[in-house]
Length: 149
Image (tube, rainbow, N blue to C red; front, top):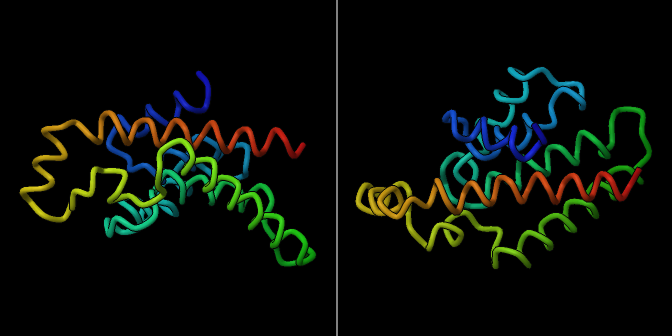
């Protein structure tokens, strides 16, 4: 099973988009499955279900931070490098999907409004759109990591 499939398996089992993306990479980045699910939980639904930045992207940004970010004894270059890679991720995602904003990606529907959430579910946007965002975020992250080996 590749990482995109693994991420979609988490997503299909009621984990949010951020959890699904980060956890697909967790073991190779030194996190346990449970740690990655917990740390990324609050980022789902566009960060705390506020529908800001797509959770699949925030999960992918966490992956890039773990792979390339600045730790306690690292140079500032690593911080700037992780920023550059994150911008690349967001730019590529926006080229594919037109936005990085959760609400816009869900047809401008508000998942915190009961009527609009019902419409999101009726239209199957979590099952269609969000699954694409999860899979694409994983693939884009893999590409960035592969290009920087």
